[in-house]
Length: 79
Image (cartoon, rainbow, N blue to C red; front, top):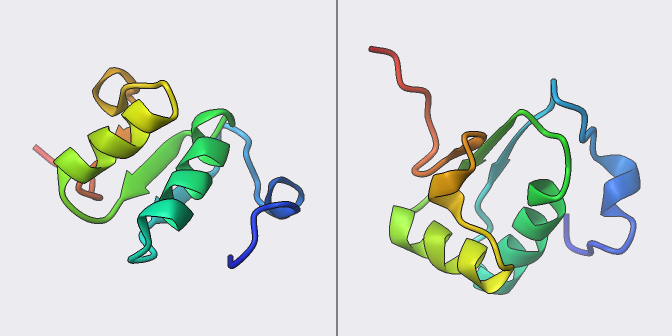
């Protein structure tokens, strides 16, 4: 997505939804994660360093490490 004004209408934000975020733009990632963090999406993966993800979540008043839906760096723990 390049604009976020109508993104909520385009994105399935139910608990069954899964999203992966990485745009190489801090501001774009912040806007996308702000939308997803306030949604019901069951899996939010963020590509890139965990520290960057924590900084973004801190900027939106949340904690990535306190949200069990957030996986950063992206992936599933398999064992």
